[in-house]
Image 1: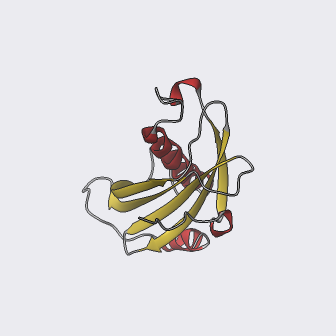
Image 2: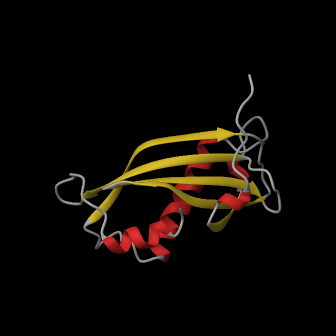
Image 3: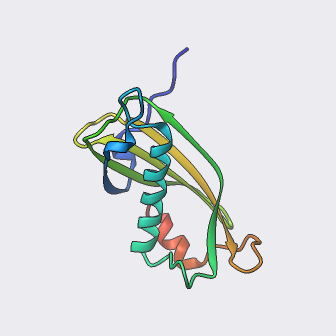
Length: 143
């Protein structure tokens, strides 16, 4: 069974770095699959904070993950610096699909790629709410 290749670096629009930690490794000597989700979630939220779209205490909108998935292609381990690429796959009325790739620093091939779909809801009612124009403008830069 052949798998589609993971996305190349050139397809990502925004980058951040994380460092592996000793306890990220599992009994098999590589980073446990659950750790990747933490990295990817951090990269999305870091982007939102840096672009003044996310304020934990003051936002009327909050993002809820409604779908996620990850494909793995190569192991990562402690100690390594990991480069996380971010792009937007789709923007809906109240939803955003974030796509991310994890690369060992300097590596051309992705070790893993992930997608998160967030539905943005009103903080009080928890009902879907339309993305404001300023959000759309900033997010469109990553398509």
